[in-house]
Image (cartoon, rainbow, N blue to C red):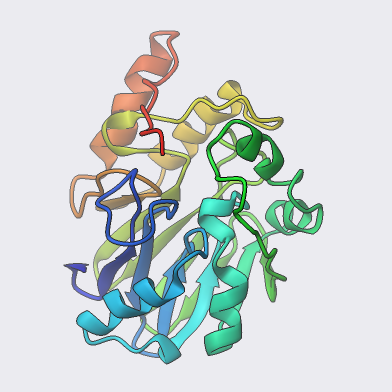
Length: 249
């Protein structure tokens, strides 16, 4: 689903617009002019549906050259191994995500999420092996895209957001760090940290961007900073950002 020039939403589950498998996060695809760059992969239960969404937009799955992971949670990284096997894309993430993936289900809180009923008992996760580790603040240039890695812990200790700029436009792929209307997710996972999450809002607010591309729910293609400032208004009033209410599967 094309949402802006060179930008497509290719997966979104029950917490979004139900474009693909229910467990999928929002996954965004950028046409770099030198291949396709994917941000997050969904849970991996139905890669064929993601391929079909791409084909409906005239995009070839085989042209994916890079897959960036915002963090290790299964709804964001579960499809990475399968996608890499199908198109030989390079998997890119921060070192914290690489470490979490290497630890298996406990490292990405999948064991706890399955016990809580977030994932069905028969869900099977294949951890991807990253090809490239990005340092916080590092910049990668892929075709027309200039991608800056921003450390945004809080939702998880390993969380990274990515500022994607081309021409005079900027999009923030915020993963689960920030959602529409300045909301965040509160989760009883081992590495959720509300103080870190609040500090990450300041990191995001310091970046110039037009579109906000969160991991669940509604996205925006302009005036994206109003959403981080909505969160900051609460933080500066000594209150946490409003929680995003998730739909129970």
